[in-house]
Length: 92
Image (cartoon, rainbow, N blue to C red; front, top):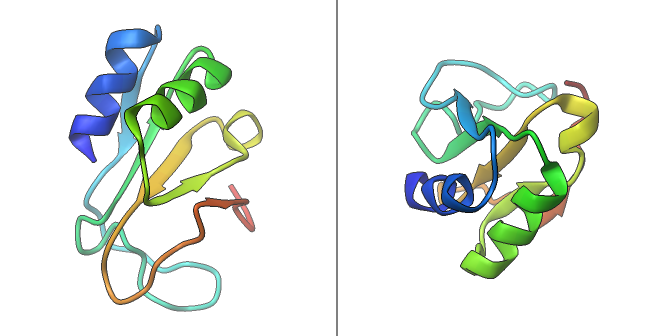
């Protein structure tokens, strides 16, 4: 995941991590993929550039599609639970 974020950072301006490994739960009560280090949130000045760079990188894991609304993009992979390729946050 850090490799994907670095790829985006090299192509888009204002990219920096917002949240990496941390404790927490999602609204359904399940543990967040951040708990196990399988998720990363990052900010970008241009979300359209960041999404294009992720697609160019070939990102196959989960990816939020509401970066502008939530002010960050969430990417994830692995774990016992997989998020859909493009999903919307239930809350930001």
